[in-house]
Length: 327
Image (cartoon, rainbow, N blue to C red; front, side, top):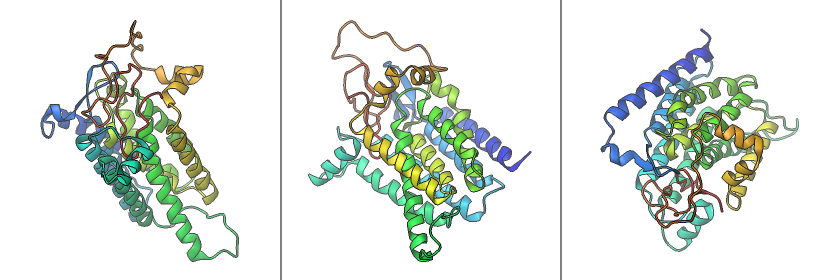
């Protein structure tokens, strides 16, 4: 069995085992982790910690990466999961998105989302520094090595923190964030070196719990989506500098677009994307004849409904993730 296969197997087994153990004895009781999805049905957030743990275990046991890369994987996965889990369980208030949380901060209100923004940013920087130099810089021969090192650290931190946020933005319908992560992982797997090795474990952990997500029995929540995105962002730090800059620009562009555009609406209006989004899912619920104040809505923070619109997001994404539902 190759190193990548061992990492994938360890990640998948660890994620399934962690989910089973957590479901059997949920910390704080099952109600602490139960949320209402877009159908108004109860789902559990325990998938998130299980995916994060599986990805970290698989990444730490991977044969390819060295000690620094393994430490970086642990920092990225555990840090993003911890801050995401904090937002899952403690979030309150209607603020969402970068503008919402920064606006609240300007008014003197410290939201859990703002704490998560800062925490995941720090996590990204710490993981980037732990991982050390990445792939070929692709810079000019006369460029300063010190300046190049600083630039690489900033780019890599942005990939890790931005990846955590972007994955969270897609966790609005069953299986969507995992499908996007599979696509990202496939692209990284085609790259040589560190990126290919590092991408295997988080994707394998997520795929192991994809049936629970598609079956609408569980969801990633912030803990799982942030951790999954952060670990894939770390995998991207092994790319050449030009590719990393392009990836970071793509992440930044999609994040900015999420502030004004609903990903769900775009997907629903685009045939191939809609087909892929529905692949493996239960049929979409029929739209109600008339809007009702009692229509089940998803939650902004795991406990507080965001809106009564039936098209509201599957789960809230406050903090670095957010952009809940169509606008």
